[in-house]
Image 1: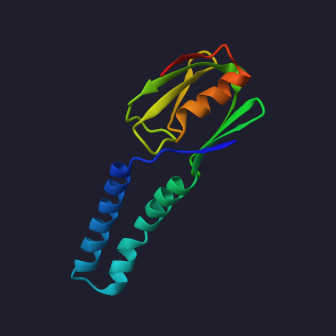
Image 2 (image 1 turned 90 degrees about the vertical axis):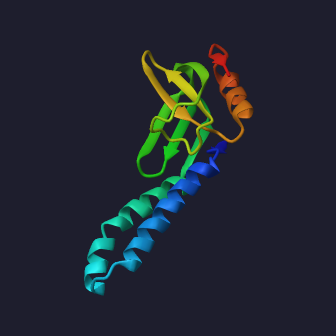
Length: 138
């Protein structure tokens, strides 16, 4: 089953405002169009990356495996039997989560990932059906 990432609209608004500011500065620059294009071209991959992350961040539980997709940057495959704990986290660390309302998935011995599924309760319950030994603190 696929779970979309929860989205913090304040975080999304921050990115949109940043891009609008960049475009406004670009348009108001008093230089030739050729130079404007040369300045703007390096910005395009950043815009494409952010759009890709917003469109392609989700979590899939398939059989006994949790797949975490965060645009082109994150592609994790975690056996659910290796998950040891799930806890609430408000961390701002970089992660495949589009919201600051996050949960921390601890797996293996010292690995963890922060995610933000839209339906946290349903997501956690599905993981628990596969591995009831997961310690949950949310």
